[in-house]
Length: 67
Image 1 (tube, rainbow, N blue to C red):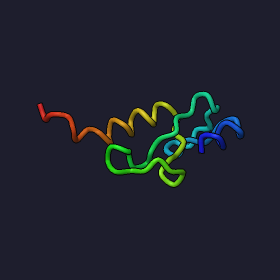
Image 2: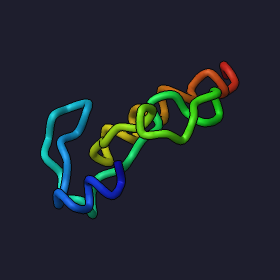
Image 3: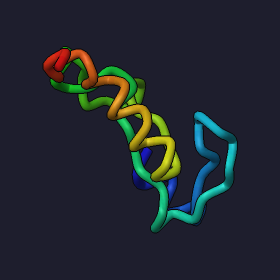
């Protein structure tokens, strides 16, 4: 997927739909590696940086102490 994004010059954010230039797009693991996800094309998506930050925070919120 990374190569396809570079070749296309960008990608649409899978979360918000914004078109983002290749240098500003993040390739995100849909199921994080830390949660058993694999590093394969079927487990990655293009996200803009703000959406990637939100998703990462949501994916790992359970690890934070409740206080």
